[in-house]
Image (cartoon, rainbow over the protein chains, first blue to last red):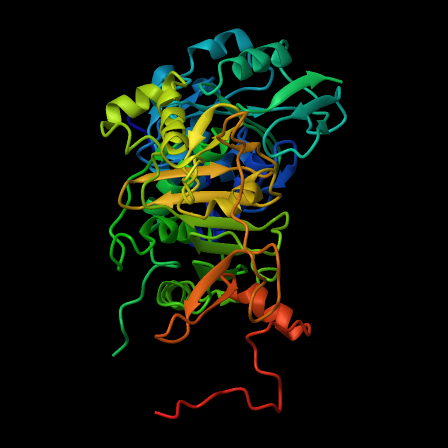
Length: 206
Length: 297
């Protein structure tokens, strides 16, 4: 798809990127790296970028840090994300793909139906890294039903309580864990905050 | 005239993004070697081009960088890489393990325990633990995919058959999270136990071989062995001649041409810190006392 940045798309497609792309992307990357290395910790990614709605600051900061022409980005509801797609394309050069199998990153909707997640690339046994990273918006990263996390990056166990997770999330993540080393890496995003859940993390209801 | 300036930390931003994505995949799949588009660096292969690229991709202006080569802060490789990042990223550098946020290492893990929040970056020459057993990359990929690691046990068994014990002393293979067999880089097997459950994030970069891999904090890392030949680390008969430390990895230093040698800590920072704390080895001159024996000839 060619991105049409026309008169209809206003300044907000061009504005709101990193003020200092070199230092800001480094700062966001380190926070994302630490979040992935310590699943369950909440990474503060607020204030780096101002994306068009409905994209969250956290999802936008992650895309601007990691996406480029090598990583097609798939949107669950492109029709709701015209401005966000234009903004992402302008700031990263990453192509928006309609082909779920090419997705390097997937921008999901709140309460995304997990049954559809089976179509994302999970890598192959030779190259388990050729898999998609899902950016999943939730209502809040706290205040929901507690979930216990164990696995690499976690000394004993850690508890998270995001609210607004899709129905069947725990079950689909258990399947994801069972497919290790293949699998999806999921980042829960809400506003300017994110929790990373790599494929190694075991998620259980409290 | 002003000299042309490099981007922060030398690498261009697209290269950093590519390396950063590889690092994240590596963290998500501990022990799996993620291919990456390794760049030419202004130093030869074998001098830590992989480690340097990983460090360049993670380094920020607030980081404090320590670089060691075989445990030493003052060898050519360590000094050059430290100066490289001091120049291209203007980061603070240190030789103190505890003060560093990022430690790039060639073939040692510091004696002082690493702490949460620290990142240690290993320079890796041959990332594939199966490479000398199976030269074809296509085959080793399948072997990792199928978790087919019999061959590496045979290799360790042949050690026992030939020498009576597992004679592999460095680059001793480990199994990560009960899944991937990984090359810990040519650290002495003495350091292998420090990898297990470390609170620090461990990243590995192999520049020539174009691979990045990682161990998140608190990852299970088990050195391969047999029930009747359990994994053992090197033991040293004497303490460090300079700081009297025991339970550390020692270097042999030849002191004359008549067979004289002394054994000193390979970790120079650990040794210096201990000496500052008042520890005193048998090879160290005592202040105010003439110990240097001049040759009559």
